[in-house]
Length: 141
Image (cartoon, rainbow, N blue to C red):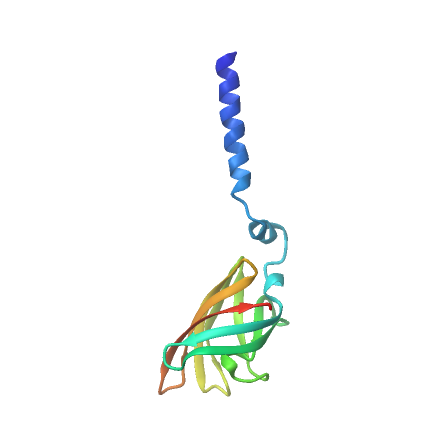
């Protein structure tokens, strides 16, 4: 009997540890809409491999009406309010598939991850003359 109670305690302990490993973000993805957490007005802080750092500007992220799993990032790469980059959302991940913005003059692609209320990302731009890499984050002040 004593042996069975030790085994039961070990099983219960393992069961409790498995629950502790889930974060709220994991549960949101299982039961909610993963796009929802990306939507809204964000500050963008980024650093370019050529243009340097100190870039801080506003972006507005909305759901793409043509694809409910995609977002549209207004003012992406500080290209103006009329410019929107598309990104596919899967769980906490954002994928900016290769696409053209700014009257088809700048090719972009990259990725990012939502964690702790912000999105950390990296992407490249290519205007035909210059290839530049950017890293940064979207955050809500």
